[in-house]
Image (cartoon, rainbow, N blue to C red; front, side):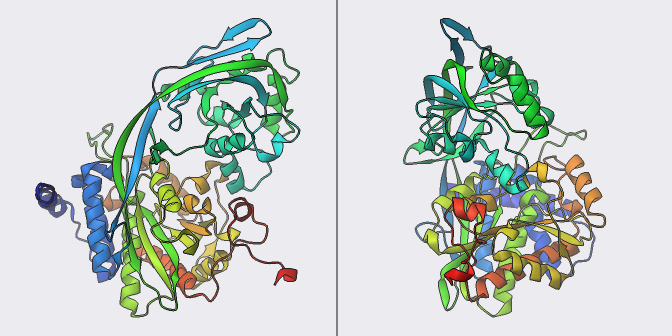
Length: 535
């Protein structure tokens, strides 16, 4: 009862803020419905919807209520709308140690100059020793001919050139590098600054964030994560000391990395001993899930996802505003998902496959809520046939093209292309592959579960490139990401596109499949298209 009264009081307190911020723009019913969701979720009363905050809990209840109004049924746990996510926040507890040994000589590395300790939530106290083997970028192929079992493997925090941008982005992720290292029996991982990482965020800048908090989820008491911990990150100075005296020269590695050349691999002339400690704290948040039951294929599910969280309250801007409202990121994505649900209800035609609408938590903390849902779905995992993710459409301009992350890797691509053509827009490649957007949104969690997925971004055509740059430069993760930025006509177009894609997937005769031989479909053992001789 006390919680209910607190929620009610908070909601009532928000009303004056809405009244003060309403603009005089005339909107039709659909646009007004879309705006109403954003007006609430991105209000100052929500204080930026930070993960684990009381305001995010209120936002969860709002989304559940709107799912009910859209005709959905609870699809969380135990007949509720919510799926609790057991979150673990973690950060380095101290500087750790890293000592190299070359023959009889010990070389202690200096924290902040040579290396920083990395927090390891799966193993809060790390103490590893072993010979050091350099494995290039740490991809599966680069372990060929090397003895990694029982060793500490060192690798560049990057991926080989010449690969598709989404594959490169995936291979550059520390979690993927640790997964491969663990599979080869390594006891620990040393990540090394690459040329690209140095250009993006030099080691000295990384040091300033070394004691920041990150987040994951726990499972049965242990935090999620690979068994071979990446316990330290080395800058250029530390790397030079690591390679000293070895046949493989650090200068040659850097030069090859810079031009995309072949990088030598092998055992280095040192062993290493490292320690790291991680401070953990538990907190709680929920995914919100609603179900629209299908008809003749009701046992198969299409998941629509949008992250509900944002970054909360932070440093003030020039006006003194400290609330990071997150209207575009991602109140409007959540609102669009709710309006897709309402369109299904208004159509009077149930989809053949069931549709799960999931507002996921802790995206800003590293896709944590969606990763947990993909690992612990509230329906049988193999029954999920596709994911359509709605995340931060920059709705400030009349868009003429779309970037559909992940679509070209499965049969979903043809359905997305048809939906785009019907809206009068075309699909274009990722205009900024180096930004690794493919691994920075919640569809990636479903990809890693072997599920074909797509996430739409508005494209660079027409005024798109300039409008996107302006939003990212001035408003992304800033207090100025507010409701007034949004063009509601474009918002309705975005809703319509995602409705058309979800409808097409749900009503198709066959479930989506990965393209024959696709990298992600193969890696994560998803349903694969057959070749002519296999049909």
